[in-house]
Every structure is written in structure tokens, then in C-alpha cells.
Length: 155
Image (cartoon, rainbow, N blue to C red):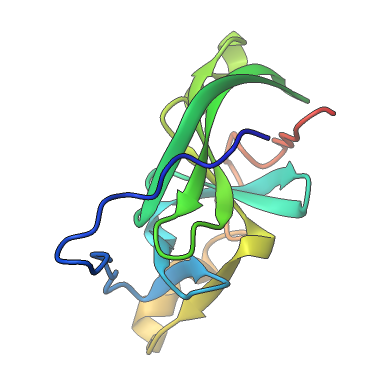
């Protein structure tokens, strides 16, 4: 892989970190920095070198490395590795471009590796959980286009 890009600048010597006030938050396993909200999760059906990976519409507290073309099981993609701003750990990648027409939905979206994050559920009452019960066992709508997706880097 590419060497990490330089860490983001700090304000007054302290790194500014955004916190999510959401019922479900995915955070960095090493430093607990918030990375993504549960409501931004699109799919849990991705794979990477270290096992499972999740696709999100947006992430926070990350910085991007340089763009590079990577051949994955679903074809060629231009991606940028993403790193936790707090501990500089590689946590996943951003899809900048998909060359296959069927993979265009990934453009501008983010992969977080399951092994690099914690899943925090906070103070959910039954009312907050009700919509989740309508989803399939993997947390996806059973009609989702993403259920069978299995993207993995080819080495």
C-alpha cells in the first residue's frame, strides 16, 4: 500500500475531532474516534484483506491518501485509502471512480474495515429499534441491490 498522507493540521496544537450524537456510531477500534453513523451505513456485504468491510455514504475524522487504481473482484476502481485523524491507523478507503458501469453506485462512498472499528449502540428504546426489526438479519432491506456485493482487493 501507499505511505499514509500527512496527518491533518491541528488547531492550537490539539486535533479537532467531531463527535456524532446518534443512536448507533462506528468508531476507531484503537482510539475510539467516531468514524461513521449507523444511518449512513449502506451495506455490510463487502470484504477486504482483513475480513468484513462496510460501505457508508459518509465518514468523519478521516484524512485521505493519494488516489490509486486498484483491481478488485468487481473490477478496476480508483480509490483513496482513508486514515483516522486521531491515531493515523488505516481504516478503509474511498471509491473515487468505478470503471465498470454496474459499480458506479460506489463512487464517492467509503469502505470501513470491520476489524478497525467498534460498533457502539447508545440508549436505544424500543421505539428507536422498531425500524431495524423490519430489516433482514444483516441490517439491510431484503430488496437491497447491495446484498450480494463482495468487493475485495486482488493481490
